[in-house]
Image 1: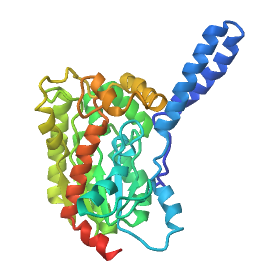
Image 2 (image 1 turned 90 degrees about the horizontal axis):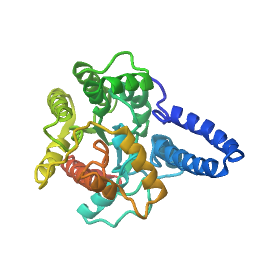
Image 3 (image 1 turned 135 degrees about the vertical axis):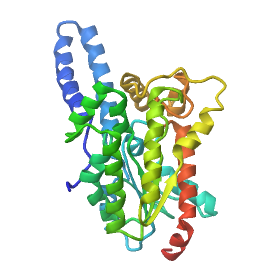
Image 4 (image 1 turned 180 degrees about the horizontal axis):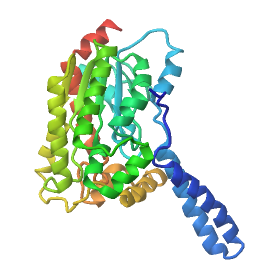
Length: 339
């Protein structure tokens, strides 16, 4: 298996093109300074936001290894495996909030630092654009080097996008250099292997497997029909899995909230890349005006900022579910033992 270091997957070509256009915009200033300057400013904003969106999370496995070498004691570790929903740079990141919510629920003092916080150290091994194949063959071996007590898996949205959109499927296959186009059968096979690998290498680890959240807030649209099929696969895999494996019902929690909306979202898309490419710069460049909730609301969404990624409301619901699972997996006992 490859080392699985974070990369700029899905953004590398965009960043290279952006640099070329930046150079051209500087030359344009000598021809038409107004147009050249406007182009330069726009491209700078695009480049900075793309850099931020594709950067590794501050609590990545690499950062954890470096940080752990300076620590003497050890706390329970939660490893989070997933795609951009876990990576958390193109939407609201849920991993930093887990220790805060857990501390509050257990009546403990709130964490005093931003990452790798007591009472539970959370390691984010998410990667933008990745599929189950990438988690299995690129990231899993290296990520387990943090010796987790708990592993959270939320992966498959990009696999399912390949079933929804043929054009997007070609892009995902190319970006990830996949040996085959993801199918429901391939997804089930890879997810089974991921869980088996974790169990075989760390048999005492508690594994929480999330059902996939909706793809767009129109629950009747075709993408969510496919998501529900994928979630049936997840339920089947979890039921057959060896060891301490628990299903975390993300879809049903989100579904119960979306069904209460007074007006169904007009969204009938699985993911709008163009919409996301507008929202991300607004979030990073004007955070005082645009948080993820506001960007979601402007699109008529409640939980998903662009039809795929989480806004703060969606993040909070997910964190609640994760903490519920951790409590059921005796995280309080693990914290007491390692305190």
